[in-house]
Image 1 (cartoon, rainbow, N blue to C red):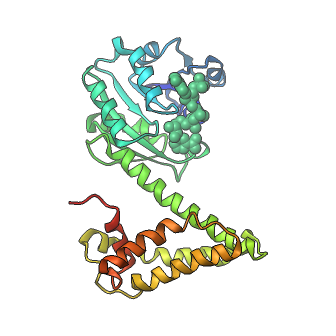
Image 2: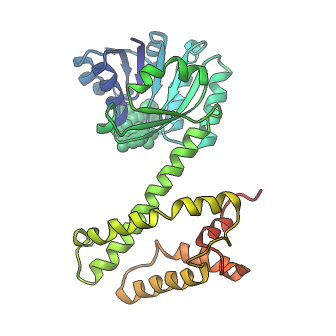
Length: 288
Ligand code: NDP
């Protein structure tokens, strides 16, 4: 079993450390606020006095703190011991931040793997938890058994920016779902209904609509939004306009829906009203 250090014992770091202890690994912990180490010490972890001590006494170090500036500050403090160390950063951030941190560590002789946790703390170590990784393939392969103890591991490639990019893409899908749910619920409750009673209608509808995603994904990849169109954008733009107007009639702010209407209207005005709704992506995606 590996000797693993966990730096950062917030809700997520503590769950990572506790899971590794439970699965038989030798775990060292460090947290800025020392009192947060106590439950881990009671469960069998060694408590390090500094990040450098934790890193120096482990085969693998996993960071999980609030943001990249905090991660960078911790690693800068441990700079003298970074050479030849294996570091995994599971802190949420941007691809640019991951690449900067990877370059900082590479320059100091450390191997770096970035990770994006697709789970909440109680899911860690159980089925259904997923962690996306990118960066050093050798580090990923070398520590795969320990990483698999935390969640299903999915390696995306050697660019350290890929894990945060895919993490944030998945979160974008989630926030789209949440914003749709909130707007739909605001409409239903404005009419005297209850969100909980609306779910038996909403959930099968969302499931049916998610069945259209493979076709939309093909159109996104090919850039051909004019193939096999059954619900054209000009028609859908009117539906979006109706949603916004109905929201105002009901006293519901259309703030979630107006951006979608604006993008659809721009695409229709550009002459693409007979295309599928997938064409709206052309108004926002990076130009080739
Ligand atoms: P918490 O707010 O519970 O904990 C934050 C941690 O960051 C604490 O250990 C805190 O230390 C530490 N910290 C903050 N600032 C500094 C600093 N300047 N120097 C050193 N340490 C610092 O957050 P979580 O544990 O929930 O989240 C950690 C990461 O995990 C985030 O990037 C989050 O996005 C990600 N994540 C969290 C999920 C969740 O559901 N909780 C889900 C998926 C990812 P201290 O105790 O001293 O304040």
